[in-house]
Length: 298
Ligand SMILES: Cc1ncc(C[n+]2csc(CCOP(=O)(O)OP(=O)(O)O)c2C)c(N)n1
Image 1 (cartoon, rainbow, N blue to C red):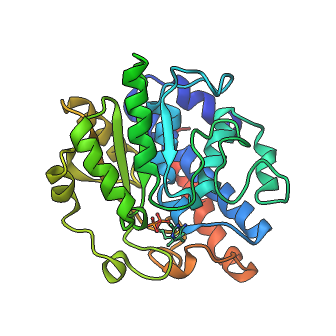
Image 2 (spheres, rainbow, N blue to C red):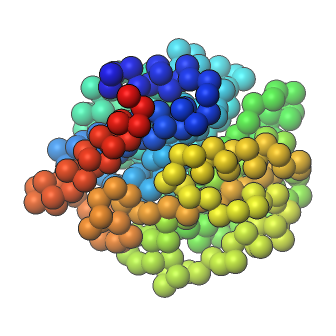
């Protein structure tokens, strides 16, 4: 049953059933990320767990792509501006068919194709190398403008965290998108309220973020969506499709470290190695969340 979740999710046409399948898949991805990060004693758990449902929905439902032809010119693009969440991107890419999932066990090994931050020249399916926060929106604007120049109709999705949005370059890029209005560009904000060593309010408050984006010329989806609820993520996609002008943005409320209660919302679990005790205390929660989600699709 487990091995078929990917195929079942991709093939399912009924949207509520598909959302349930993707929720199960995403919960399984969280477990797998947790395992790999504990085993390797490195990597960023908090921001991988918060964005897991959104990225799963993008690759298994939303984006036009072909894992057998990773550089297909007409594919939709995804830029993970918060590149430290690479364990999430790699896990989703592996299970979407870009490379064999056992390769995830080589995360951050010397010479592995799965480095700590995504590298477009090393990993099939990675559309942009990221890791230095704040570059993603600029790159996304460039990709979307390139689509216009080449008369292509691929879409470009850029995911940022609040830390990314604290970078000045992000606001230059947001401003340029307001001017050039690139068709097909969507900004996804994974708003988990926590950064590397504190809350976003303590470090650099962004609110009112939706109003700021609107003032910069963006078409912002009307609600704050629950980015850890697959049905709500589907609703956000419908809202995006109903909106007319580009560029578009959508704000998601998420929990950093989602799935392990004592890690949620804690900057201490932004990127700390997952020690044995924490692993053993946290894993059963992820297993039960997965089992509950799986029971919904049996
Ligand atoms: C230019 C730059 N400055 C600092 C860092 C170190 N750094 C890595 S992650 C992070 C915080 C990121 O916060 P956020 O974007 O909200 O990520 P999330 O909570 O979604 O993981 C920082 C400051 C970096 N990667 N790049």
